[in-house]
Image: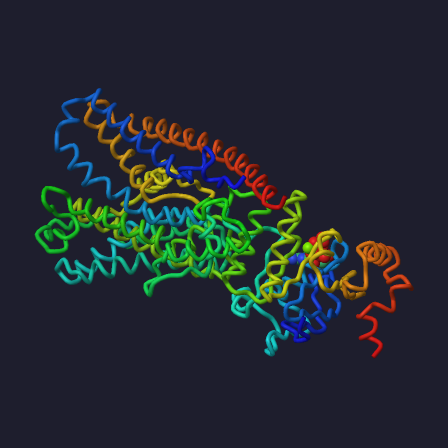
Length: 265
Length: 347
Ligand SMILES: Nc1ncnc2c1ncn2[C@@H]1O[C@H](COP(=O)(O)OP(=O)(O)OP(=O)(O)O)[C@@H](O)[C@H]1O
Ligand SMILES: [Mg+2]
């Protein structure tokens, strides 16, 4: 794993009217790193990644991507910078075939804007085969696909667009066990390809196997940050429960908390 | 183990759109057959078909561009008034120039384009729901036409021999030119919808607007363009209608509001957006006109037209409702099968 940051968010504050969703969050993702972003309902996880993808503009703070500083982004800009958000709500047009969904918004066309359908089908097929998702023809409408397959199509889209950072906001919600397993394999696949990912999930057992580092958000603040090698899933669960109850990390894990350390130094 | 899913039963003929098109085509032939049974002499009379080809463009042309609007999940009613606004500008230009100029046609088309742009801006930039916004502009443009003409028609018979007339409503090889225009426009719009990026965006916006925004599609720009195009095409339909009658009527277009919307709906484009075909709209329009022709030539009073239209619209929508419901069940079954497929490949 490299130590170079692919994105960095500094002191991000976001208010929705009187609700303060983020209260000065520092967050970074390194090259070829999978970050597990965890925290209770309403902690601000979705808000943070939506800011990173340009759906919301932060009230304060700055975002640094590949050495460039931004006050805010737009989804279009984020795509161009190599960031793809795979949403809690799926960003697919379900009446349309797989290949069209993969190229949605980035169609391959001739100079006049007419679609090069065969090229797109071919590339779609190649990208899907990297994830072993070739059991359905690329002409299949997405509504015929199971939830896990649909997530796979979204990840294929990220692969085709050569995204460097794929954000997955609760991609395993409402999926069967086996399908969840598949989605986790997709994330591993991304990592093998040298990509980075942010993986948001409520379920520690979904994040744990794929993440290199965990960032725990609570009520709009980062309260803790751990490397996976230092923790078991049970440790992580214990920490999460403690944070939910008392707002702080149990004494015996405090040494391992990267976030506290960086605050102290 | 590795049986590809598409070899399983039921996945061939992937999109139910084809089935919808088969159903709508079947309804068309059923009506044609009914026509034959009820009135064999009119059925075999070529005049029946040439008049069908002369008259149906007035319904079908605006319905073609309306299909795009409805696929985006929006609606436009004001095209019925734009159908009068465009030819009014044309007629006034001709009156001022004293000749049937191409300039008049172009100004008329531009008026339609501008009126469409105005709709698009009201809907996207001011956020007015399209139904409300276009009810407003329906009155606005009709009002402009009525005030400008004081309700009087403008006779244009003296220009009958002009180039513009023969190019738009003349005859070519025994076929009314306006019908050739209709087919040409249908092909162009089919290409846009199915083979061009712009058409893809139209479908995506209707299917999942949030997703379209998230992949960076400029939704407002696409919607404004769709309304502008629809305005332009509505003005074109109004112009050929005016030339076809050789008179500008200030009430022109009123009857097409319901007929064109019905053509789109009979043709299988749901008002919820995301789906729809130009082919369906074309056949839908032909069905309505065919019924009208059938009723008129069968000797019963014209009052029957609306009644039969109503029955056919309800039958067509009922058939589509059944197909769509079966499609939902089918999708559910397919999702189950694909779930098992992903499970197999894990284990
Ligand atoms: N668009 C919005 N308008 C108003 N308030 C919002 C909006 N989006 C989020 N919030 C509020 O901001 C806070 C953080 O929400 P967010 O969705 O980021 O949490 P989360 O950690 O993703 O939670 P969950 O696990 O439930 O998805 C919540 O209090 C939420 O109600
Ligand atoms: Mg969330």
